[in-house]
Length: 336
Ligand code: SAM
Ligand code: SF4
Image (cartoon, rainbow, N blue to C red; front, side):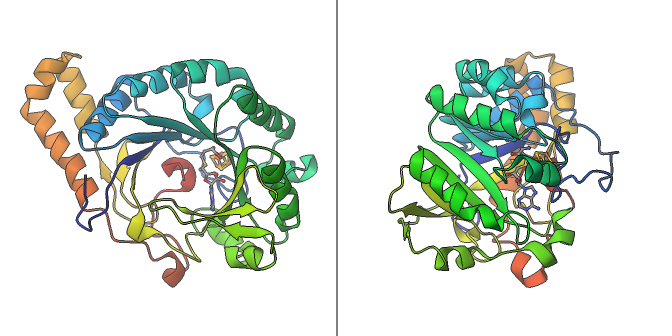
């Protein structure tokens, strides 16, 4: 559907949990992160009903994220249900990749189309410094298995940080040259724990582009958040996700569902509409009798809330002007 600014909103990102098996320094740093966040209470049925309503309003793509979506026990069932929803054409996952190798067969069978794996370094000791854990080998194996299984494209997300992993840009570009992998460098965002690191570690994407003459720009695709480049030798592409340097708000096509069942129509906005209790009450009252449920007054009220959240999506965020996110939620609650 078109929002009040004429953008076609067709992409829903669902955070399935606010828990994670890593402690990334810019997201959920060890010891500094309040551990009292409530883990997602959305059930399979609740997630399914919410996705169905979004699909009725024109959502075609769903991305599952978190926290870490692969620690969610029912992830394959959730993906399967989404794949059965009329109108949903594309299902993807953003993951830290630790459990990919173990789960990729069942995820693919369930209907998963695409995977983004977050891997900020290629070096074991640095991986431990950034994430607090030593799982790099498992992540690399997960990426290889995805390629073997024909998942395309596989994308690697790299949050670039001055003084931490900036020296590895060339190594990451080589990966996109040698393999059918898209490497996407993400600008560090001043949200949650990232706010503290921002001052010393932020690096604007243009600095990388200017120092890498082998990067050839590709045509910008409408509603892509990434500026895309190809290396002269490349199989895969290099993308820059740069919400600060270059913002794509005027083309943004996405809405987000937080782990607690809140709709956030802008990642960095303060607006959030929680629908979980409405969804829960409905399912309880109609006990999965979907025909009766769909006829009910409560269902139309819920649909109106969702429609309103989509239609009133803010025009843009003010990250670069204000230097910090207005979001009341952190990245691991929203899903990125
Ligand atoms: N756990 C999964 C993962 O790491 O891929 C999914 C959730 S994570 C919140 C989604 C994405 O947000 C990851 O690529 C992560 O690197 C990115 N992210 C988290 N905090 C960030 C920050 N402050 N700035 C930029 N990217 C961030
Ligand atoms: Fe976990 Fe992803 Fe956040 Fe890292 S970025 S702590 S993997 S949710």
